Image (cartoon, rainbow, N blue to C red; front, top):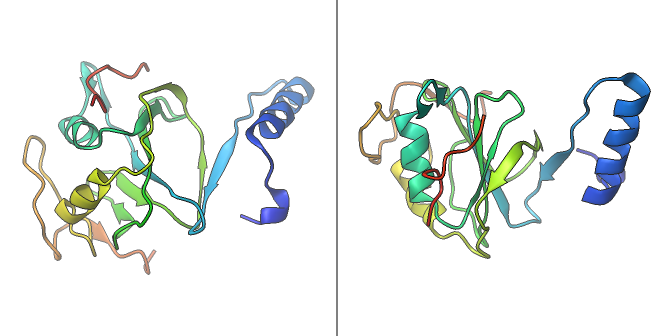
Amino acid sequence: HAPSNWMTSIEAQAAADRLAQMSGMRHGVGFVLTANDPFFCVDIDDCATPTGWSPVANQIGSMLPGTVAELSQSGRGLHLWGMRSKMPAHSMKNTELHLELYHDRRFLLLGTDAIGQMSPDCVAIDAVAAGLGLVRIAHVPDGAKLASSSTAPGVVDPQDSGQIGPHVGDS
């Protein structure tokens, strides 16, 4: 996370390409989220199913127009990247749903097959964070609507701590 190690995306891709040539292994490029930038990422792990995306991934994707969706490096997860001028208070993790929301102090390896167009201020993240509990992210059974809760199972306090279908993140 040290800013002295940061570089432009062009420099980072060139470095990853050089490492791949030298090692014969694939190397990716990551992004460090900080409080000084407007970016957030909803990271939904293990949401790929044999027929598409899980109901939770589809629901959250449809609730966040103005985000860019990409396939995670594992090929089984989804990243929804957006910008918000002022992020609402939120928890970072729901282990039961394999869901994470980050906007500060987090390094993420960039994924592949990005689709969508990022709006300059995705205010919809406020409602998603509120629906996921604001202070804590609530458990949402498959197919259920998001509802506010502060003491849901599967919640982890932050202190404790394919091809993307066209239906995800459509606006």
